[in-house]
Image (cartoon, rainbow, N blue to C red; front, side, top):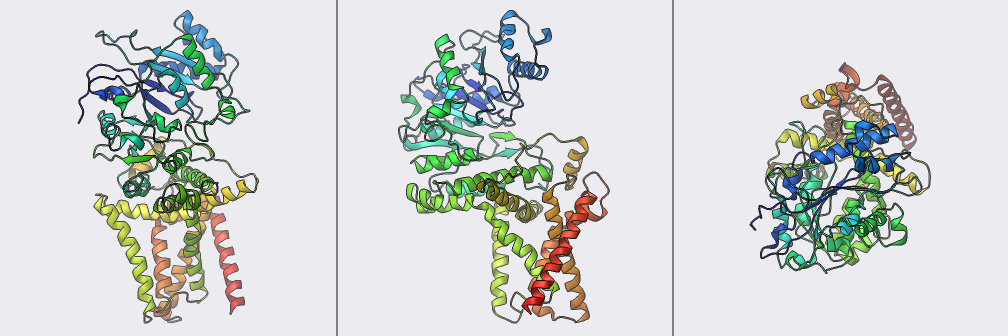
Length: 582
């Protein structure tokens, strides 16, 4: 491991205007070229650990209050310079304001109580206008003007550093001569705080952030997941395979001169992209709701590689939604964005296979068409059940050799998935909840995401996505800590989910009754009955929320009633279809 200097090196923190949805940290550090050039980003995480700088938080709070009040009061300023700075906000709103750049700390001028030079700390809020779409990850071009650091760390607004050695781990890759020439980024897995013991909402996203990146690391590397990632700036500026080891880079020194700040203000304009290649071949790639996924994919197609760094201690920790409706809404947005990549000219099955490789193209195709899972999951969640009630066998009898083929495929798939979790040290109950949420996503995340994308493609107005709230009520948080599902929202997600649950419950009841009374032969319908029972067991929390729970997390009566009516209509339609078929 490369040693770390004890000096306090300069770095840059860029953050969006509070409350705008663009509160994304961009922590940047210029390199000091010495005998050992490790100081490029060595102490970034230490400076940002757990709490953000008190001065920055104070500035953010005052700007937020000034915006809400729409005027500057005396309690918001401490001197004449700040008064002049805050006057810029007069008459502006969070979604309509000019660029604000404020140097809070400047290395070489500001010192701590021990006399040590403090790192640079700059507040940046890019211009926003209702007439221009706001791209949340465009701040890197501003940091390029201010510091031009060779390494850029991107973090979500709710993510903090949990390991001060994370920059060193990333530097081990960037300083490796065999990797540095085409290494675009080093991706750390997303880790979260506050997840309950059994992870009832599968909030760790084990397949997305742990299993898949490990496999992709053997090809061109993992994809960029939007946070916890160290970038080589050269890769974001279109300099394909032009990156050099940090020891050979000459990063510009930070300057608060009038010319530099004027250039930064120009780069922060909301319409800057209109007259440049930014967002298409330079910087983070636009054109999709999942610009992080799109950026990582495009970089690999351009010849860059990435590395998955997964230390035992979490490098960065963030927050996740603590109720089911928010968790579903968040992932629905991902599904829509992935479709946008899949049905663009950068389709992985054509562009990806041609520009990267056949395996890489298949991997990204598996990701972008994730929403297609709604088709098989909805079929297996409804068709065998409705056929069972109407006495129509769909699978081979137990005595038929083909029965064992179906049984093997089902058991092998689930056992392989279970093995992945157990090898990673995940207990059985957490795996069970993960596979339950995967089934729940079929009629919710994947179905609604697919429908929204289709409506958007047809230029039909579809319900928009609202940024997921990470703030929970005390009662809701207590339920989550106890491992109780929260179905309190009047959401169409829960209506469809409850309808599927009712269909499966009725199929199990009718199937068992007919087997017990001898109306049907169990061998003929054993697989359908087992499938209905498996889905019904997974739906147990839904039944509780519908029928016997009385706390604040129960499903609203109106949603339960609507789901029951929909289930009845499905039974009627199935009866008519199977009767006509007979």
